[in-house]
Amino acid sequence: MRPIYLDNNASTRVDPQVYEAMRPLFMDQFGNPSSKHGFGASARTAVKKARQQVQTLIGAQFEDEIAFTSGGTESNNAAILSALEVMPHRPEIVISAVEHPAVLALCADLEKTRDVKVHMVPVDRHGRLDIDAYRAALSPGVAIVSIMWANNETGTIFPAVELAELAKDVGALFHTDAVQAVGRLPIDLKSTAIDMLSLSGHKLHGPKGIGALYIRRGVYFRPLIKGGRQERNRRAGTENSPGIVGLGKAAEIALKFMDEDGKRIKSLRDRLECGLLQRIPDAFVTGDPMERLSNTTNIAFENVEADGLLVLLDREGIACSSGSACTCGSTELSHVLTAMNIAGSAAQGAIRFSLSRDNSGKDIDRVLEIVPALVEKLRDSVPTCNVYGDGI
Image: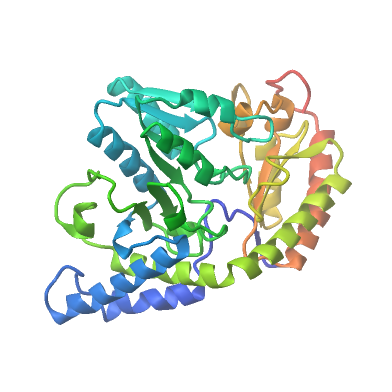
């Protein structure tokens, strides 16, 4: 039986149309886009088209608001570090407790090395931002707010547009890590107060190693990578023209089929979710029950060790992921589930299933057939260690 891939929040399969769009940039249009000859002009034209495709997907007002990067991590780092450089008199940052490590690790390092104050806003048990705490964290000392648009583990959607408006009230820049949202949610940046937005190609059926940072026209920006004058002096280095073209094509396809794909994927997700909860006792969905990405369900199976379940699922040809890692003698729970105050006995057994347009009803049927038996098997087994003291 064919493998079933349900880890699309980690990475998606490159769409065949994306792959075909990239091929000429390797073999025929291989020139440096910054070169003045015909080979360069051909690549430059392809890059320009891709920039317009990304612009259209996220509703940017101007083509030059799109700067290509190596992916979401670079985009997040570039946005935050630039804000601190252009506003050195405002050495404070506001983030949420459930941000991606690309933001959390950077902010932790800034606190240690640059005497930057980081305000971490808590979330509730559904992963929703504490708006009162967010308002309290905002002040004239804040250079930038960086709040994700949708959480990668639970799929909980944050009110990025409204949060940006509140940041504007104190003169702070607003950046959103929209890596999980772009291509899955309709976005129209020109009608918002969002200053910067990060996206990544491999989350929307594009290639790895390519992403973009939206920088609203008029926002002062200092480049993270310095050197040549590529990307209008915002990101030095020879353009990854095959990757850029692949991202552009992926953006075009995502926009065209977003509504259709979203409805079908949500139907599959809901069937998977309901089926597992009906078949498996002591299990529950984490994240916002209403404002959640249509492709994502993170289910906590109480008294199950997630890593063991993932191994068994992989043997059955089912790929998904865990928000936690638990090994004998040491424990590291998901920072997202910890911030949501999910009990350890449940958090250690949380599994994220993230779907895409490649999945089918047959995939869901097979998962519903296999997962309950594996959970029961693990619960019946005698644990070799129990770091929580409350059973596995």
